[in-house]
Image (cartoon, rainbow, N blue to C red; front, top):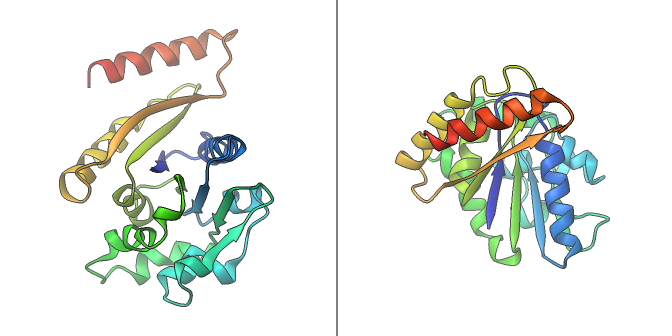
Length: 203
Protein backbone atom coordinates (compact mmCIF):
# COMPACT_ATOMS: atom_id res chain seq x y z
CA UNK A 1 0.00 0.00 0.00
CA UNK A 2 1.44 3.36 -1.07
CA UNK A 3 -0.10 6.35 0.71
CA UNK A 4 0.57 10.03 0.04
CA UNK A 5 -0.09 12.58 2.77
CA UNK A 6 -0.84 15.90 1.09
CA UNK A 7 -2.26 19.36 1.56
CA UNK A 8 -1.09 22.51 -0.20
CA UNK A 9 -1.32 24.43 3.07
CA UNK A 10 1.70 24.31 5.34
CA UNK A 11 1.61 23.64 9.06
CA UNK A 12 -1.40 21.33 8.99
CA UNK A 13 0.35 18.24 10.32
CA UNK A 14 1.45 16.34 7.21
CA UNK A 15 4.80 15.31 8.63
CA UNK A 16 3.35 14.55 12.06
CA UNK A 17 0.76 12.32 10.40
CA UNK A 18 3.40 10.48 8.38
CA UNK A 19 5.68 9.99 11.38
CA UNK A 20 2.92 8.75 13.67
CA UNK A 21 1.27 6.40 11.17
CA UNK A 22 4.58 4.93 10.03
CA UNK A 23 5.80 4.44 13.59
CA UNK A 24 2.52 2.89 14.73
CA UNK A 25 2.51 0.37 11.88
CA UNK A 26 6.18 -0.50 12.40
CA UNK A 27 5.43 -1.08 16.08
CA UNK A 28 2.97 -3.84 15.14
CA UNK A 29 5.58 -5.54 12.98
CA UNK A 30 4.68 -4.09 9.60
CA UNK A 31 7.50 -3.32 7.17
CA UNK A 32 7.29 0.42 6.44
CA UNK A 33 9.11 2.89 4.22
CA UNK A 34 8.84 6.68 4.46
CA UNK A 35 9.78 8.67 1.37
CA UNK A 36 10.34 12.34 2.15
CA UNK A 37 9.40 14.44 -0.89
CA UNK A 38 9.43 17.76 0.97
CA UNK A 39 12.56 19.93 0.42
CA UNK A 40 12.23 21.01 4.05
CA UNK A 41 13.07 17.36 4.96
CA UNK A 42 11.22 17.36 8.29
CA UNK A 43 10.29 13.67 8.06
CA UNK A 44 13.93 12.80 7.44
CA UNK A 45 14.98 14.78 10.50
CA UNK A 46 12.22 13.24 12.60
CA UNK A 47 13.71 9.80 12.04
CA UNK A 48 17.29 11.11 12.29
CA UNK A 49 17.77 9.98 8.70
CA UNK A 50 18.69 13.17 6.85
CA UNK A 51 21.35 12.42 4.27
CA UNK A 52 21.55 14.72 1.22
CA UNK A 53 24.08 12.42 -0.45
CA UNK A 54 21.55 9.56 -0.52
CA UNK A 55 18.36 11.58 -0.90
CA UNK A 56 15.44 11.10 -3.26
CA UNK A 57 16.87 14.05 -5.20
CA UNK A 58 20.00 12.01 -5.93
CA UNK A 59 17.72 9.25 -7.22
CA UNK A 60 15.99 11.69 -9.57
CA UNK A 61 19.41 12.91 -10.68
CA UNK A 62 20.51 9.33 -11.42
CA UNK A 63 23.41 9.66 -8.97
CA UNK A 64 22.21 6.79 -6.77
CA UNK A 65 19.74 3.96 -7.26
CA UNK A 66 16.63 3.97 -5.11
CA UNK A 67 17.66 0.88 -3.16
CA UNK A 68 20.93 2.66 -2.31
CA UNK A 69 18.99 5.65 -0.94
CA UNK A 70 17.12 3.57 1.64
CA UNK A 71 18.28 4.11 5.22
CA UNK A 72 17.46 2.14 8.33
CA UNK A 73 15.87 4.28 11.02
CA UNK A 74 16.23 3.76 14.75
CA UNK A 75 12.80 2.14 14.69
CA UNK A 76 12.82 -1.56 13.74
CA UNK A 77 10.97 -2.33 10.51
CA UNK A 78 10.95 1.35 9.47
CA UNK A 79 13.16 2.64 6.65
CA UNK A 80 13.50 6.16 5.25
CA UNK A 81 14.49 7.80 1.99
CA UNK A 82 15.64 11.30 2.83
CA UNK A 83 14.77 14.58 1.17
CA UNK A 84 17.12 17.55 0.90
CA UNK A 85 16.98 21.24 -0.01
CA UNK A 86 18.11 20.52 -3.57
CA UNK A 87 14.85 18.67 -4.15
CA UNK A 88 13.19 22.04 -4.70
CA UNK A 89 15.17 22.33 -7.96
CA UNK A 90 13.80 19.05 -9.30
CA UNK A 91 10.69 20.70 -10.72
CA UNK A 92 12.83 22.87 -13.00
CA UNK A 93 15.42 20.21 -13.82
CA UNK A 94 12.77 17.69 -14.84
CA UNK A 95 10.52 20.15 -16.65
CA UNK A 96 11.52 18.85 -20.10
CA UNK A 97 11.25 15.17 -19.15
CA UNK A 98 8.05 13.84 -20.72
CA UNK A 99 8.04 11.02 -18.17
CA UNK A 100 8.53 13.30 -15.15
CA UNK A 101 5.17 12.53 -13.51
CA UNK A 102 5.91 8.80 -13.56
CA UNK A 103 9.52 8.86 -12.36
CA UNK A 104 8.71 8.31 -8.69
CA UNK A 105 6.21 5.59 -9.54
CA UNK A 106 8.82 3.79 -11.61
CA UNK A 107 11.47 4.07 -8.89
CA UNK A 108 9.06 2.83 -6.21
CA UNK A 109 8.17 -0.07 -8.48
CA UNK A 110 11.69 -1.41 -7.95
CA UNK A 111 11.28 -1.69 -4.16
CA UNK A 112 7.57 -1.70 -3.31
CA UNK A 113 7.42 -5.47 -2.84
CA UNK A 114 9.84 -5.13 0.10
CA UNK A 115 7.32 -3.13 2.13
CA UNK A 116 3.77 -3.48 3.35
CA UNK A 117 3.29 0.27 3.63
CA UNK A 118 5.02 3.17 1.90
CA UNK A 119 4.20 6.69 3.09
CA UNK A 120 5.09 9.75 1.03
CA UNK A 121 5.42 13.12 2.77
CA UNK A 122 4.80 15.99 0.35
CA UNK A 123 5.58 19.72 0.27
CA UNK A 124 2.87 22.37 0.82
CA UNK A 125 2.41 22.90 -2.93
CA UNK A 126 0.62 21.23 -5.81
CA UNK A 127 3.65 21.12 -8.10
CA UNK A 128 5.59 18.26 -9.65
CA UNK A 129 6.71 16.72 -6.35
CA UNK A 130 3.13 16.34 -5.14
CA UNK A 131 1.74 15.32 -8.54
CA UNK A 132 4.37 12.60 -8.95
CA UNK A 133 3.65 11.40 -5.40
CA UNK A 134 -0.06 11.09 -6.20
CA UNK A 135 0.73 9.31 -9.46
CA UNK A 136 2.79 6.75 -7.53
CA UNK A 137 0.20 6.13 -4.81
CA UNK A 138 -2.78 3.90 -4.12
CA UNK A 139 -4.35 6.30 -1.62
CA UNK A 140 -4.18 9.86 -0.35
CA UNK A 141 -4.87 11.18 3.14
CA UNK A 142 -5.43 14.91 3.67
CA UNK A 143 -4.57 16.41 7.07
CA UNK A 144 -6.75 19.44 7.86
CA UNK A 145 -6.01 21.68 10.81
CA UNK A 146 -8.93 22.72 12.99
CA UNK A 147 -8.67 26.47 12.46
CA UNK A 148 -10.46 29.28 10.66
CA UNK A 149 -10.35 28.83 6.87
CA UNK A 150 -9.25 25.23 7.39
CA UNK A 151 -11.15 24.06 4.33
CA UNK A 152 -9.99 26.98 2.19
CA UNK A 153 -8.17 25.59 -0.80
CA UNK A 154 -9.37 22.05 -0.16
CA UNK A 155 -11.53 22.18 -3.29
CA UNK A 156 -8.42 22.96 -5.35
CA UNK A 157 -6.66 19.93 -3.92
CA UNK A 158 -9.69 17.76 -4.65
CA UNK A 159 -9.69 19.00 -8.26
CA UNK A 160 -5.99 18.15 -8.51
CA UNK A 161 -6.67 14.66 -7.21
CA UNK A 162 -9.45 14.20 -9.76
CA UNK A 163 -7.17 15.42 -12.55
CA UNK A 164 -4.46 12.96 -11.49
CA UNK A 165 -7.02 10.14 -11.41
CA UNK A 166 -8.25 11.05 -14.88
CA UNK A 167 -4.91 11.38 -16.63
CA UNK A 168 -2.15 9.78 -14.54
CA UNK A 169 -3.44 7.32 -11.95
CA UNK A 170 -6.94 5.97 -12.41
CA UNK A 171 -6.69 3.81 -9.28
CA UNK A 172 -5.88 6.65 -6.85
CA UNK A 173 -8.32 6.66 -3.95
CA UNK A 174 -9.09 9.52 -1.59
CA UNK A 175 -9.10 7.69 1.72
CA UNK A 176 -10.33 10.71 3.66
CA UNK A 177 -9.19 13.62 5.77
CA UNK A 178 -7.53 13.71 9.17
CA UNK A 179 -8.53 16.54 11.48
CA UNK A 180 -5.35 17.65 13.22
CA UNK A 181 -4.94 19.72 16.39
CA UNK A 182 -8.49 18.72 17.28
CA UNK A 183 -9.74 19.84 20.69
CA UNK A 184 -13.25 18.69 21.53
CA UNK A 185 -13.47 21.41 24.18
CA UNK A 186 -13.15 24.00 21.42
CA UNK A 187 -16.35 24.73 19.50
CA UNK A 188 -14.26 25.65 16.44
CA UNK A 189 -12.98 22.08 16.17
CA UNK A 190 -16.54 20.77 16.17
CA UNK A 191 -17.51 23.33 13.53
CA UNK A 192 -14.63 22.34 11.26
CA UNK A 193 -15.54 18.68 11.70
CA UNK A 194 -19.16 19.42 10.78
CA UNK A 195 -18.13 21.41 7.69
CA UNK A 196 -15.69 18.70 6.60
CA UNK A 197 -18.29 15.96 6.91
CA UNK A 198 -20.84 18.05 4.97
CA UNK A 199 -18.25 18.82 2.28
CA UNK A 200 -17.42 15.19 1.66
CA UNK A 201 -21.03 14.10 1.92
CA UNK A 202 -21.92 16.39 -0.97
CA UNK A 203 -18.86 15.94 -3.20
